[in-house]
Image (tube, rainbow, N blue to C red; front, side, top):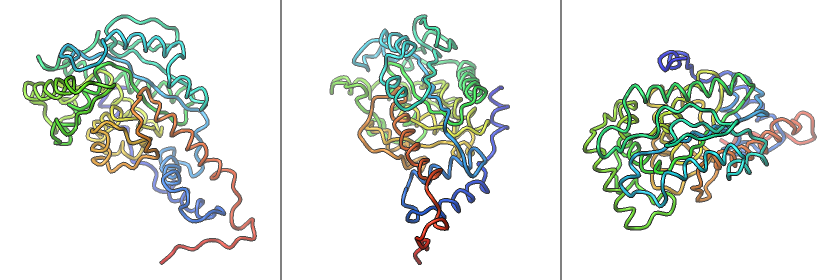
Length: 352
């Protein structure tokens, strides 16, 4: 499926299914609205799946792995070699998200969309667009056509998950330097000051943070990305992981898959996807509020209220997997609790 075909296939979530789920929640023998945002999430999932009693029993977290040429500007604590090492560890189920996903009953789908060297692993999806992006301070991070190719890889991965039976998907990333590209994309799309929106990433020193802010400012000034054109923004100051995740949101929405966003990087891609097709917003659940400064700004821009506020900033999709465990608990109430009609308890009535 091409990018244009995917956009045309996306429909708003089913309002009837959401209303039915809300009515059923009101009949369960619990105080009205007492599960809060978790209750809202189940209603949202019902609308995405177009059924009042949805299921999330089979689920996958897709982890998009890519390198970023801007690391040449000294904006990271470690080198690009770490991206390849962690990508191969994802294949061996030896990363944080893999351990959490095993406990939570979530499959992990690692995707090489732009790692700077060849990586090996029988569980990896090999979809490399290029060996990392170019240094965005010296020109566009990637060609526009390569950005669209990366988006289409994301669409392909969403279709893959749908075809193998997933009812819910989540998304994560791995890529040294990607909090730099994320801050650049977020600054352009939200209009926030670079200094305000840029954080320390994986423990950057104060001196490193100064270099990071400077690099982002120079990249935006040099490339002049068009804030009204998310593909222009992604191609000029983004990364292959961001573009792939953007496509994953689009593909999931086109195929009725609710999708759980992780932290700041995946939320920046969510904003790109929503700007490309507003109906995508119906399908995205936001797991947690990242500690990165751009995190809350992006969530506010999307009018998103995550389940978890725990100061997380690990990435890989770990926050999304943590949120899925909360959804499981909420579904245990939705699927298994008796209704007021089956008990001696008088139904709660809305307060006026």
